[in-house]
Length: 320
Length: 277
Image (cartoon, rainbow over all chains, first blue to last red):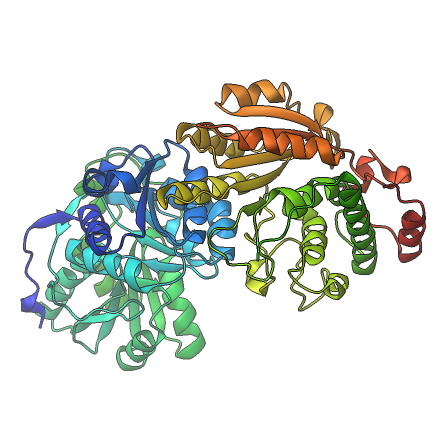
């Protein structure tokens, strides 16, 4: 039921990440955190204050952080390394590929400041290519939670239950926190948040909330849009995607990321190989971001509920 | 049982001689690989695995073992041959190097299950960071084992090595002994022509390391250098091990063309006939 999603108050997903790490660390002595000079910006200051002996400051040296994390993991620790996604995933790519992924080590990499909603810092600090680069790495799990509550749950679970490398993507801006603390959630399984058989909106990250709002507007026009939250991009929930393709015949994907090689492409890889249907990919279309207020940028890049409603309506009526 | 250290130079020389024979034969059999650096490091590896390191070949996962991180994965043949001689796996397996399905991958790959292998590596500039992580973990666990890390001199052109060097000193990781294979050569030629890395000792000292130098092809000098490092406290240590690329085979010594070239099977046997101890 769509009415059941109520914003409990805006909260940043980075805060959720920090809480998830802290909660896991309170009962797992193996959890250690590597600081790359922006510890508070990525929500890890709570851990650093509470577990100073397990917090290692490594300075502005992301490639080294990744290798150090690998060495800690090889020694039985569960290292968490986080910085802005542009550096965490892109500057370090070869180090992640060899030292972490080829060695298949349980290293948690937090990609902060994901998406265009980072705002005024502009293009250099808006991670729009991290999903593409992280999901192509063998052994890597890629997680992109939709709100702060879900980020806490998935971060904690990824630390506690997974074995290999994990990339968790989260944002800076406070966004609606609407999922429940006792929600059914499993890494690798999508969540159907709204029922519908006319079209499916498959979203990840902050755009899940926008997708729900767009679906509400569509329903007022008599269009019943299914909304799916894929909080795990890899391994991807093929079953829920194929079912949506079969039952709703059209799929729209939504991501705060380049549509090329990103989340929409990951969904398309499943669709075209199993049950081809027409798709529309909403995201950033092969360009850099820019400075502006988060809400201005979301509007400019057509990522708000109103813009999504308009894009989906055109896709349905005019096949555009 | 921990391997009993061998400190007699003649015995160590004999082991290095046998390791070099295996390196030449396995590379000739494989038909590709890195001959020069592998031969040059045979003495350092012999000293580490037969004298300096505390390890148990029959129990490769022993928690208190000294770790060896090979950052320059391309000299895998010297690591494989040494591990086999130390008893980690049968020497017979050395001839499968680089073949499909072999545990002896072209560059070390842990996913293939070779005992004694600490790290999958081959992309330069990453190993010292991993050593720093292992050293931090040992300190956190109050363990006393050491982390050895083998670096190439050309590899020091990678910026990430210096990120790692800075962090080891910042965290006072006196449980790291890094050894630079200082043969002065890389694929394109001399380090000094490709990209000057000197003054090397001063660079490491300025990064907060204790630096010592030795003839990396002289067992007693290598052992003395390691013994010196083991006495140090509060700072990580670096050994500049001056080696000859291709050491032992006069025809190819100090010839950078042999960085990534291998002998034919006949040539390997000729080299072995004249191999110097």
